[in-house]
Image 1 (cartoon, rainbow, N blue to C red):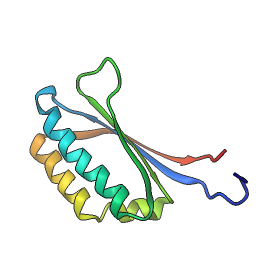
Image 2 (cartoon, rainbow, N blue to C red; image 1 turned 90 degrees about the horizontal axis):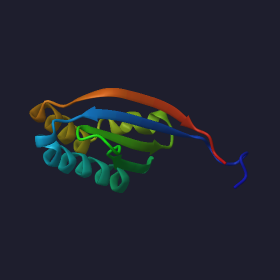
Image 3 (cartoon, rainbow, N blue to C red; image 1 turned 60 degrees about the vertical axis):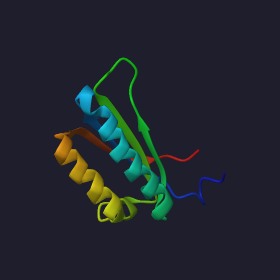
Length: 105
């Protein structure tokens, strides 16, 4: 693809620490948010949920949006509000959030 015509994307990588006994409930809530983000938001292109090898309590999201505005729209969605409510119930906090501009090939 021609680099001059492709717009760089906005990437968000939050990391969470989750008590192992609450992991299933957390992942259920996270999957709901991820599925609705990709299906319902035109500006969300990718939303992956990963667990790093060798950890029992860490979950990382890899989210790709058109731009920061598309991400800010994501922050207002009903599915994110559900996820945030679940995080409070499960006593989970984001530990690190990285914001990156994706460089196209």
